Length: 147
Image (cartoon, rainbow, N blue to C red; front, side):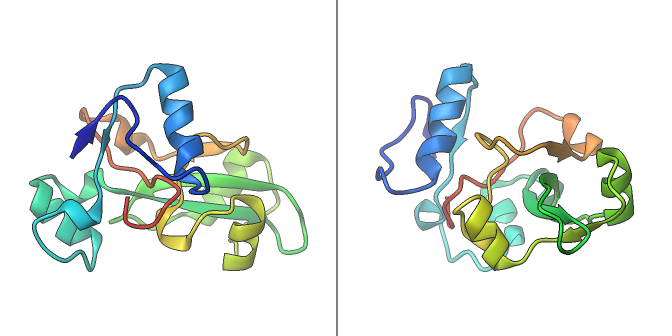
């Protein structure tokens, strides 16, 4: 695990914008690379076990769009153990409905991989599950798979 300041990230990796945003905000963070862990990572549970943290402290960030055909998008951050309540998401955003974005929409709006989406450094609205506010640390995607 590497700690602040930002580790080397190739300029063409989306993660660079994440580390830049964290540094600019003065936010402390640590970087966890799957390749540096003590075994293969096949699931968030593997990461939790190798880092000795609760799986609920590992998040997923979902890109959601207003009802199909609409262009408005937002990010939803929740534990990997939770399910997104799209009706509640739509209500929070004052939308008529919300659906999960496609991989194509994810690439179009964020240029990030499905298994590495970061809520940090985006201009989109971000909704965070309030249960993540408890505790000290939480793991989020970096904009690059495996980091």
